[in-house]
Image (cartoon, rainbow, N blue to C red; front, side):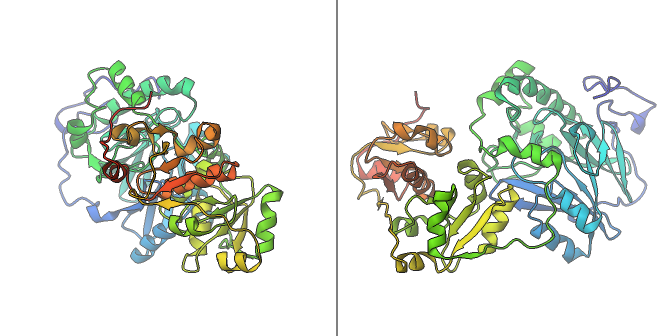
Length: 492
């Protein structure tokens, strides 16, 4: 941030509506624009990726062009929204070097000649317009102003959208998010506190915007970039000043403690994706497909260092699966667990049911950079059995069927702390591969419903630790069936 920008003091230039905040350049009083404003609420289209817990945004610029903000590599919903309005994406802005998905900005530049807007400090390795604090980009009747808001990453920018002099809204990326702020440990635990202090100053800067300014974050509920649960994905500056516990922190030290204490684990692929976004994801000139593979080819894949991923529902996997395959059900969270549990440099073969979309498997894998896709088992498990190949099974037990045995809870730390079966061993799913030896033989593996627990059982089986059972149900249901009450608090 240039030394001339002081986020703590207000500099008054002139009188009345000419008074401006030095940190943002926005008038302290809303100016009388003397006529209708050019931006309306329906000019903004939020685009939710429920699996990753993120929003991208499409802004109708009113002249046949559009601005895309933090678009991911899977551009289907964005293109559908633009197509309905007859828009061409002319600008693609990224608030930061994303760790949880590959950016779609390079693809938009290739396909639609979009100008990529991003922080100059990010040293991106592809054509873009590098922006520094205070730089502005004309968008027809609107203006986009870059605000340096480091914390989530070093080079993080927020983008303030102006209609004339009026601050319409601010794309806050991983800075100010609804009722929180994004995590600051993605560049290493040793920098987490330093970046948390930068995050504090960034949030204080954003809080100086007019209270009716809309807040449009990228990360929201369900994001491992640290968003609390809740249904609201956008807000206003005024609402956040009232409701955000981090903005309510009385000083920087308390802010830092609150932010760092709330950090949980995050997927392993986060550690490598930011650099891929800096270099620029490969442009796709074709629709990736999932080739059909004979059962014998899938059988041979594991000996060649590959993985078999079973995307069928947990109950189907339990009833019979390829030995050593990893169960990751094809649902919203598929990409997250694929990226958390498996390497991105090994070939992958998939087992699916006939009614599951092979294209969805490919799109979810590609959006987080998993491109070594060998194919899918042609004919599914029926073909596997017909080839005379071995079949493994995993007991999937309802709470009343489950025995009184060692109970392994694979949920996230916050879920476990909110209520768990007394005496449960807590081993998060994302870390389980490193704790195979800590898992008791014959244990009952459980999560919130059963999907992650089945994944955990498959990880253990893949590592040579078979014999575990999976709970098909919730911890509270197991406790009720066994005359127990859930316990709160973190594991020792």
